[in-house]
Image 1 (cartoon, rainbow, N blue to C red):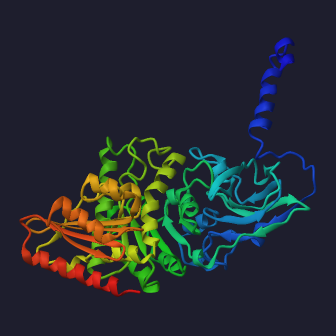
Image 2: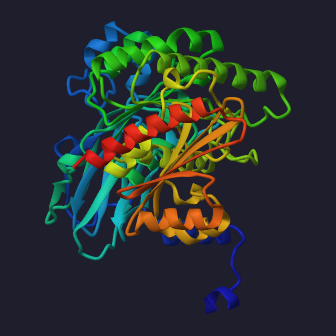
Length: 518
């Protein structure tokens, strides 16, 4: 630095100097420098590959089986050859990790999505009980080689490498020094079933800056579950031939998020048949229907607002029809709020930026967690959802509840997100929030309003919770203390005794089943 201050530098050398400093000191993780040690290359197919629902593919990194070429429309088939959502899990103690990959298209980027997201690689490492970003492989041609990270301390670590979102790959290899081992990173048996996302360009990852930043990948890391990304840009259209293929996957959950590629007539025509295709093949697998995110300019552009409203109305009506038909384990997630309310979440008013995808993951996470939670208490909360066709005569669901992002099941709300928990009063909310593990509520209207609330607790005497409610509110509510849960039934003065009796009978039946369960 002394020379910098005293020597006279050429103006042509100064930019070159700072470019060298910035390029080598600040961003060393993805360079193409010469190898100083012997590198042994490992085909990622020899490691733990995730994100594919079928093994009989035409090319190694396709997302649909080879026979799908004759079953689906050509655009769907072409997009299925993009490696969106595919990732490689491995572990190694190597101080250096390199990658080389060959793309199937020379189009490395789009005008609203960078090459790192379209055609790059994204490396994460398990550290401090969470997946943390570590490095990005930046593409410069169809054939690429990059040093992802080097100079690591010698320690066995777990890694996850995401493949391109909007390009295909014909080969992907990971390189480590010849004296270093690299191993598979399989999942335990209880986390092998994937979450399957079926959707549009947004689901496929447009327009994340890195391949691990699409909301589906973020959710896979947070929930520690494999994810299969079946997003097809412009072509997520609820088609029966695709639904039949998806039904072949033994999934933990199906997420159907296709509204941006459909008009309201198509939503009305296709939702019920596709759900019945999935349900016929997988009678017990949960299905989540997702409304489209709000266009960022819909607050001013009436045509976009009408498009959001009409498609959502059609999806809600189809969902209610499925409930009337007795379809089980069907869930609903609203669209408002997915990208936030400040219009900063998209690159073009429609496709999310990294900020938008992070917000989508925040919006989806408590919903997916509550569906997938299989604890007895969580299942009891879900059992309190009274099917629409079993409601007492003259009783209807109060729409617009809740305002916070909770899961909608049979037109009620369920959350396992502590930020959304509330109790009968601020005093009791503050007292019990730390012990709450789940919450359910629904509001109905007959001649007056009637509400059904329930909470799941951990490490607390639920009889004492009931005593606290009675102390504050007297006998205004009917209460049940059942194992780790408390159920509360309340009504306005206008609600008839017959309506109240119908709800009381339903709750008593669910409580008895939960009490008897071992």
